[in-house]
Length: 254
Image 1 (tube, helix red, strand yellow):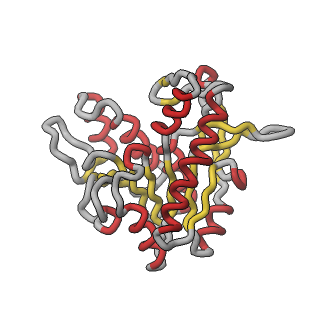
Image 2 (cartoon, helix red, strand yellow):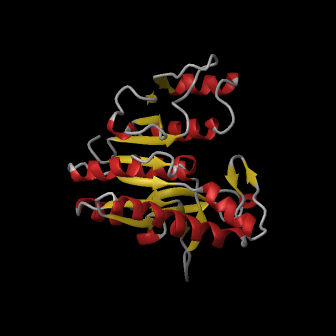
Image 3 (cartoon, one colour):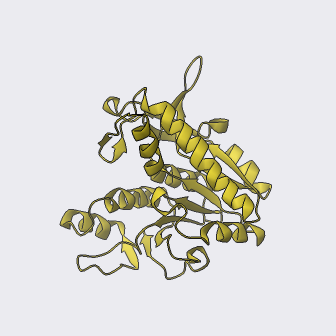
């Protein structure tokens, strides 16, 4: 694939590496305009706690009821999104913030009734992303999607890793890079695995070598891989990592 580099910035690495946004801006200045997808779950939890609204999770997904939804929309499509846009702009490259509801980019269905307003992507309509990208502007996309309705669309909360995989596939991305707070996927002895097949990744999960918060990350990589996207997990805390992707972290192979 010869499309853009898609970079997924997770909440755990937001602001943890001073060079991340400079590197994103530098890539754009060199003519390789990336597309940025972000999360921000920790920020959402902080605001929900301040509003005395409990956070609940099922299968790693935030249960998003009628009280939670306005907060996550405000945080993901607003606060976190604009912080990233402002940081990239300040680093010297033009960036514009979107979420999956803008331009009806990320069409979804309700993932499961017990999760509330949580979306599962069914289609990506990338026209708005492509228009910005072709104009040399970095799209910064927050994980809010929409479920089509007759009178108005229903906003939904969507797992940001899944969003990144679906958008990367729709854009024909050259690579999807997940910036995380670990060096890569580790085996049972704690050694980072440089190249990983889907079969081996599933075996590591079954063996318990991949556990906790790394399970949904690896599953998101396998999802993106199934969509035909080259995927890589790297340590977003490492300065300059976007300039040194070759040989870094873990690359997922078909």
